[in-house]
Image 1 (cartoon, one colour):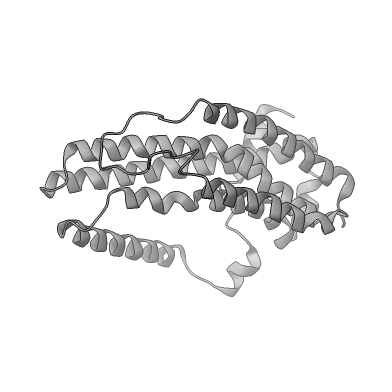
Image 2 (cartoon, rainbow, N blue to C red):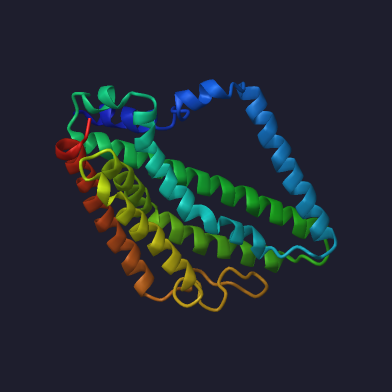
Length: 256
């Protein structure tokens, strides 16, 4: 398979629009979708600006809202595979004249890129908004904005580093559900969702010691223990193993 074909499959992940059945039930034009997004964004800006003007807005609250990212990333990987079954395109997808591993790797990489692009966009938008606040409201200082931006880089770097593993975990979970090993599906849910819960419950001690999402004081770049980079790098190897496991399930264990 040429690299061009592989990248075409990666690009295809950016073009999908979810389940056709759901889209057929709720027919909204693109203009209406954009309008709803703009209305929600405007409401958020108005409310947060009002709170900021009253000095009731903690800048760190923006990053706390992103604590749900790992769950969103998991379900993004989960949905990437499920969509093929929801749209009845799994037969076409699996019979493409492409090695199964590369077929799955393209879907995995496409969704990883989606996450990373979304994170960059969110970071830029939030940073720009906070800079505007600091330039227009006296009790927010430039140092607070810099601290906010550094904190965001630290936190989103961790999430971005773990994204390959989380995407692969979601893909494996749904793949097992469509296989002869379907009875193992609850165990995968317990393993991955329970693992996320354990990480979050110990976040203050391991991932975010001394309130690393707080931006009241000066922030430093990547103030994490050395074990964290090792865990992230190790998760990439685990992600590769999970993609291999998805390939095995798709090759040998599908229940069609």
